[in-house]
Image (cartoon, rainbow, N blue to C red):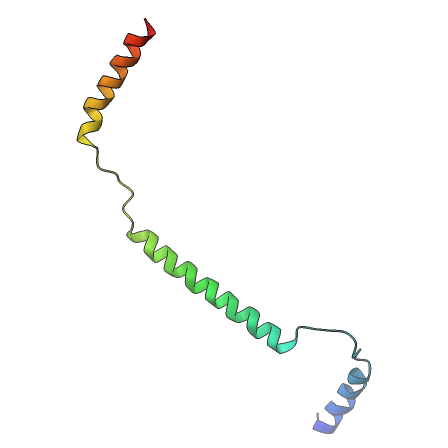
Length: 79
């Protein structure tokens, strides 16, 4: 297909184009793609940081004696 034949097929489409219709165009796509890449990078960074977090909590030595006192106080106040 020659370039002139391709243009003859495209020109009628251009005439049917509504100039009053607003479309996002290439700039809208580029902004959306940049936001998508930014979110992807942030999620990747968040997953890396969450992998470094240690969720295991060491037992508090005071909690054992405080728990026994609290249970005794509750039992004594119930009488």
